[in-house]
Image (cartoon, rainbow, N blue to C red; front, side):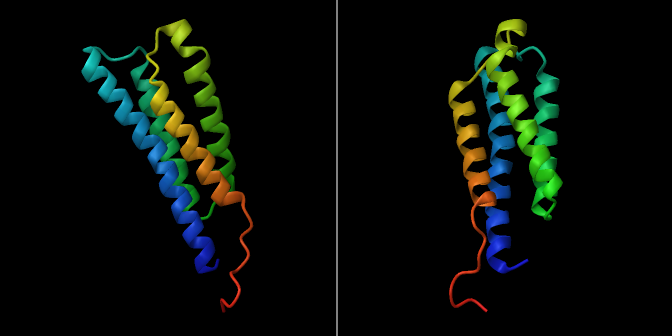
Length: 122
């Protein structure tokens, strides 16, 4: 793997670490402001930890982790936006979810764009 590809992978992994970071920060900040934890708080924590571990695995070059992460984050965001607030009274911080979506899009843009060596690199 060339240095350019490693740099792209490293930046993408950092962006995906940010998804877990913002999710956990939002979870605890919301509970601090409102005075109570959202229902299913352990599900949130487990999902963000699993997403973080998948991002770490992806950092080491696993192609399977890339697709598992993508499927996992899509399922989680659909659940988080779609039915958890309605069915279980789960709090939704739309700004944090928006930031998470932007981070995932940016990371996968880096991962899936052309990875050719820059001209003049040896």
